[in-house]
Length: 222
Image 1 (cartoon, helix red, strand yellow):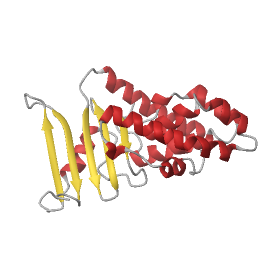
Image 2: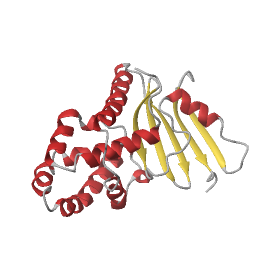
Image 3: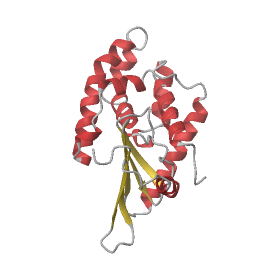
Protein backbone atom coordinates (compact mmCIF):
# COMPACT_ATOMS: atom_id res chain seq x y z
CA UNK A 1 0.00 0.00 0.00
CA UNK A 2 1.39 3.43 -0.92
CA UNK A 3 2.42 5.68 1.94
CA UNK A 4 0.99 8.68 0.11
CA UNK A 5 -2.50 8.17 -1.27
CA UNK A 6 -4.53 10.74 -3.20
CA UNK A 7 -4.64 14.25 -1.77
CA UNK A 8 -7.12 15.08 0.95
CA UNK A 9 -8.97 17.33 -1.49
CA UNK A 10 -9.34 14.45 -3.94
CA UNK A 11 -10.41 12.11 -1.13
CA UNK A 12 -13.08 14.63 -0.11
CA UNK A 13 -14.38 14.79 -3.67
CA UNK A 14 -14.26 10.99 -3.97
CA UNK A 15 -16.35 10.50 -0.84
CA UNK A 16 -18.80 13.12 -2.10
CA UNK A 17 -19.10 11.38 -5.47
CA UNK A 18 -19.78 8.01 -3.86
CA UNK A 19 -22.46 9.43 -1.55
CA UNK A 20 -24.21 10.95 -4.53
CA UNK A 21 -23.80 7.87 -6.71
CA UNK A 22 -25.64 5.78 -4.15
CA UNK A 23 -28.65 8.10 -4.37
CA UNK A 24 -29.13 7.67 -8.13
CA UNK A 25 -31.00 4.37 -7.92
CA UNK A 26 -31.94 1.51 -5.63
CA UNK A 27 -29.34 -0.72 -7.26
CA UNK A 28 -26.64 1.88 -6.66
CA UNK A 29 -27.75 2.31 -3.06
CA UNK A 30 -27.55 -1.41 -2.38
CA UNK A 31 -24.20 -1.69 -4.19
CA UNK A 32 -22.56 0.91 -1.96
CA UNK A 33 -24.15 -0.54 1.16
CA UNK A 34 -22.62 -3.90 0.23
CA UNK A 35 -19.17 -2.47 -0.51
CA UNK A 36 -18.64 0.19 2.14
CA UNK A 37 -19.25 0.83 5.82
CA UNK A 38 -19.54 4.15 7.66
CA UNK A 39 -16.09 3.62 9.17
CA UNK A 40 -14.55 3.53 5.69
CA UNK A 41 -15.08 7.28 5.37
CA UNK A 42 -12.33 9.61 6.58
CA UNK A 43 -14.37 12.82 6.64
CA UNK A 44 -16.57 12.84 9.72
CA UNK A 45 -19.53 14.53 8.06
CA UNK A 46 -19.51 11.90 5.28
CA UNK A 47 -19.40 9.14 7.86
CA UNK A 48 -22.47 10.59 9.56
CA UNK A 49 -24.37 11.09 6.30
CA UNK A 50 -23.64 7.52 5.25
CA UNK A 51 -24.54 6.16 8.67
CA UNK A 52 -27.96 7.76 8.73
CA UNK A 53 -28.72 7.04 5.08
CA UNK A 54 -27.98 3.34 5.60
CA UNK A 55 -29.66 2.89 8.96
CA UNK A 56 -32.44 5.22 10.09
CA UNK A 57 -33.38 6.48 6.63
CA UNK A 58 -32.60 3.43 4.50
CA UNK A 59 -36.23 2.35 4.05
CA UNK A 60 -37.44 5.90 3.44
CA UNK A 61 -34.78 6.67 0.84
CA UNK A 62 -35.27 3.46 -1.12
CA UNK A 63 -39.04 3.90 -1.14
CA UNK A 64 -38.73 7.53 -2.30
CA UNK A 65 -36.05 7.07 -4.94
CA UNK A 66 -38.46 6.79 -7.84
CA UNK A 67 -40.18 10.15 -7.46
CA UNK A 68 -39.72 11.96 -4.14
CA UNK A 69 -36.06 11.54 -3.25
CA UNK A 70 -35.40 15.28 -2.99
CA UNK A 71 -38.19 15.67 -0.45
CA UNK A 72 -36.89 12.74 1.57
CA UNK A 73 -33.36 14.17 1.64
CA UNK A 74 -34.55 17.58 2.78
CA UNK A 75 -36.67 15.99 5.49
CA UNK A 76 -33.76 14.06 7.01
CA UNK A 77 -31.02 16.68 6.53
CA UNK A 78 -31.97 18.60 9.67
CA UNK A 79 -31.88 15.41 11.72
CA UNK A 80 -28.45 14.46 10.32
CA UNK A 81 -27.06 17.86 11.26
CA UNK A 82 -28.49 17.60 14.76
CA UNK A 83 -26.96 14.18 15.29
CA UNK A 84 -23.63 15.21 13.76
CA UNK A 85 -23.33 18.18 16.09
CA UNK A 86 -24.38 16.14 19.11
CA UNK A 87 -21.84 13.39 18.42
CA UNK A 88 -19.10 15.89 17.68
CA UNK A 89 -19.65 17.73 20.96
CA UNK A 90 -19.68 14.46 22.89
CA UNK A 91 -16.34 13.42 21.44
CA UNK A 92 -14.53 16.72 21.18
CA UNK A 93 -16.47 18.85 23.66
CA UNK A 94 -16.32 21.81 21.32
CA UNK A 95 -19.03 23.74 19.53
CA UNK A 96 -16.50 24.98 17.00
CA UNK A 97 -17.03 21.85 14.90
CA UNK A 98 -20.79 22.18 14.60
CA UNK A 99 -22.07 22.25 11.04
CA UNK A 100 -25.01 23.90 9.36
CA UNK A 101 -27.73 22.17 7.29
CA UNK A 102 -26.31 23.87 4.21
CA UNK A 103 -23.08 21.88 4.61
CA UNK A 104 -24.94 18.56 4.45
CA UNK A 105 -26.99 19.75 1.48
CA UNK A 106 -23.87 20.95 -0.34
CA UNK A 107 -22.28 17.53 0.07
CA UNK A 108 -25.37 15.99 -1.51
CA UNK A 109 -25.38 18.48 -4.37
CA UNK A 110 -22.06 17.39 -5.85
CA UNK A 111 -21.88 15.36 -9.06
CA UNK A 112 -22.16 11.57 -8.62
CA UNK A 113 -19.33 9.19 -9.44
CA UNK A 114 -18.70 8.21 -13.05
CA UNK A 115 -15.99 5.72 -12.07
CA UNK A 116 -17.44 4.00 -9.06
CA UNK A 117 -14.90 1.16 -8.99
CA UNK A 118 -12.03 3.65 -8.95
CA UNK A 119 -13.67 5.82 -6.32
CA UNK A 120 -14.45 2.87 -4.06
CA UNK A 121 -10.86 1.68 -4.38
CA UNK A 122 -9.61 5.08 -3.16
CA UNK A 123 -11.90 4.99 -0.12
CA UNK A 124 -10.93 1.38 0.61
CA UNK A 125 -7.23 2.26 0.35
CA UNK A 126 -7.60 5.02 2.93
CA UNK A 127 -9.70 2.74 5.09
CA UNK A 128 -6.96 0.10 4.96
CA UNK A 129 -4.32 2.67 5.92
CA UNK A 130 -6.52 3.80 8.80
CA UNK A 131 -6.88 0.21 10.01
CA UNK A 132 -3.10 -0.23 9.89
CA UNK A 133 -2.64 2.92 11.94
CA UNK A 134 -5.20 1.92 14.55
CA UNK A 135 -3.70 -1.56 14.86
CA UNK A 136 -0.44 0.02 16.04
CA UNK A 137 -2.03 0.84 19.42
CA UNK A 138 -0.14 4.12 19.43
CA UNK A 139 -1.72 7.29 20.77
CA UNK A 140 -3.55 9.68 18.47
CA UNK A 141 -1.97 12.90 17.28
CA UNK A 142 -4.22 15.84 16.39
CA UNK A 143 -3.33 18.74 14.14
CA UNK A 144 -5.80 21.60 14.20
CA UNK A 145 -5.61 24.32 11.57
CA UNK A 146 -7.61 27.52 12.01
CA UNK A 147 -8.02 29.91 9.09
CA UNK A 148 -10.45 32.70 8.32
CA UNK A 149 -12.35 30.20 6.17
CA UNK A 150 -12.92 27.63 8.91
CA UNK A 151 -11.45 25.07 11.28
CA UNK A 152 -9.99 21.71 10.26
CA UNK A 153 -8.84 18.98 12.61
CA UNK A 154 -6.73 16.09 11.30
CA UNK A 155 -6.24 13.00 13.45
CA UNK A 156 -3.31 10.67 12.80
CA UNK A 157 -2.20 7.39 14.29
CA UNK A 158 1.22 5.97 13.40
CA UNK A 159 1.40 8.64 10.69
CA UNK A 160 -1.83 7.32 9.13
CA UNK A 161 -4.78 9.66 8.67
CA UNK A 162 -7.75 8.27 10.57
CA UNK A 163 -10.18 11.19 10.60
CA UNK A 164 -10.97 14.73 9.48
CA UNK A 165 -13.33 17.22 11.08
CA UNK A 166 -13.98 20.47 9.27
CA UNK A 167 -16.37 23.39 9.46
CA UNK A 168 -15.76 24.22 5.79
CA UNK A 169 -15.08 21.28 3.47
CA UNK A 170 -14.74 23.58 0.48
CA UNK A 171 -11.65 25.19 1.98
CA UNK A 172 -9.23 22.41 2.92
CA UNK A 173 -6.00 23.97 4.29
CA UNK A 174 -2.97 23.40 2.07
CA UNK A 175 -1.14 22.01 5.12
CA UNK A 176 -3.54 19.06 5.24
CA UNK A 177 -1.75 16.00 3.86
CA UNK A 178 -2.50 12.30 3.82
CA UNK A 179 0.17 11.44 6.36
CA UNK A 180 1.56 13.04 9.49
CA UNK A 181 5.10 13.72 8.28
CA UNK A 182 4.00 15.56 5.13
CA UNK A 183 1.52 17.59 7.17
CA UNK A 184 4.28 18.48 9.65
CA UNK A 185 6.51 19.50 6.77
CA UNK A 186 3.84 21.80 5.37
CA UNK A 187 3.11 23.29 8.80
CA UNK A 188 6.82 24.00 9.30
CA UNK A 189 6.83 26.13 6.15
CA UNK A 190 4.27 28.59 7.58
CA UNK A 191 5.78 31.98 8.37
CA UNK A 192 5.58 32.07 12.15
CA UNK A 193 7.37 35.42 12.28
CA UNK A 194 4.18 37.02 11.05
CA UNK A 195 1.95 38.46 13.76
CA UNK A 196 -1.02 36.84 12.02
CA UNK A 197 0.27 33.28 12.37
CA UNK A 198 0.67 31.21 15.51
CA UNK A 199 1.67 27.62 16.28
CA UNK A 200 1.25 25.79 19.57
CA UNK A 201 2.67 22.31 20.12
CA UNK A 202 1.86 19.98 23.02
CA UNK A 203 4.09 17.03 23.89
CA UNK A 204 3.72 13.97 26.10
CA UNK A 205 4.94 14.31 29.69
CA UNK A 206 8.36 12.92 28.73
CA UNK A 207 8.47 15.30 25.75
CA UNK A 208 9.25 12.45 23.37
CA UNK A 209 6.14 12.66 21.26
CA UNK A 210 3.78 15.29 19.93
CA UNK A 211 0.22 14.99 21.22
CA UNK A 212 -1.30 17.84 19.24
CA UNK A 213 -0.49 20.90 17.20
CA UNK A 214 -2.63 24.01 16.79
CA UNK A 215 -1.86 26.26 13.86
CA UNK A 216 -3.60 29.60 13.43
CA UNK A 217 -3.16 31.23 10.03
CA UNK A 218 -4.02 34.86 9.60
CA UNK A 219 -6.06 35.06 12.81
CA UNK A 220 -3.55 34.92 15.68
CA UNK A 221 -4.53 37.23 18.51
CA UNK A 222 -8.18 37.42 17.38
